[in-house]
Length: 422
Image (cartoon, rainbow, N blue to C red; front, side, top):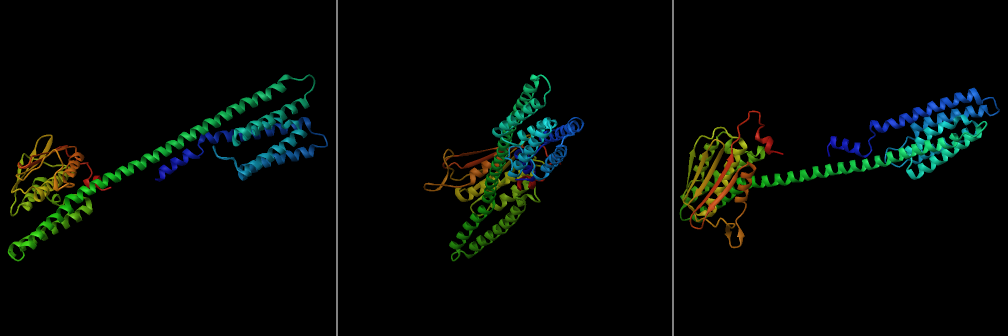
């Protein structure tokens, strides 16, 4: 998982954003404002008794305890359970406030910030009873200091305000919890999607590498095996022919080594490094020609500059088709025909070999499918945006045709090695 994705996941599962920092800041500001107001009211109206010193000390302890709690026992993150230290701090603050309320009724309205602090930190099943207890203490304190006739607002207003505050905060908590669940699901889905895309990319890369290996290393090894087997059969009866087969196998080995090195470097055909596609196809036809098989190359039109990926795909398809001709068709003649039109380029590989039933997989041994060649060619054609067709019948030879669109060459297009190499 990348650095950016980890940051996003932290934001979804516990990161405190600006909106979530606003409520604690407002609660703290309200607490100190009400604490200062009640302290001033006590000094101006309620002091003078024997308990004045105790009340002043409790105000100081109450304020200090509240401040220290923000550093030593901070509130839990949204969706997290409060720590034992935070619960101990919350209980201590409420206990000091209860004693202060009994000695100085001026501290009554400090209950509101404490109410919000409790509701913000505690689960609803604990926060609601706590809100009820705080409200009852406030009502009792108001009744105790009331002068003259009882004002109904003293009894109705605190519960009403507490009920509204409790309902709003509990609803906000539940919405925030649902939002965190949705964000967690989104992050998990994004992570699963990224993993799926990586797996798909790996599978596609494996398929592409299998095709490259089949069209280079495997075909070269197959040709070498056939030549060396022929040399072994002729070693005593026709040493010159056997020696020619060995030299041909050595030439294929050298070319295969160059292909393998090029393949490891950037997966582009070695024949296209210093040649155009027509020149590479002509060189391929010359190499594949030999005793028993003549391969011709024909060019119809001017292909002009081609995207390297398109040229590589057509060359690989030609290599695969000629490998099939050499190994399976028992043909004496084959032809490569490159036809260039305005919007597409086509390549035909025809032979006069034994052919096969194009409607069923060709076989090289009873009950055994021939291999990877035709599927690999179709994959290459499809990856280049083209199509591949095979026309064949027993005894009538085979024609493999591929047509791919030709897009204008953009000088700003990246080198194909950036497209092919993961």
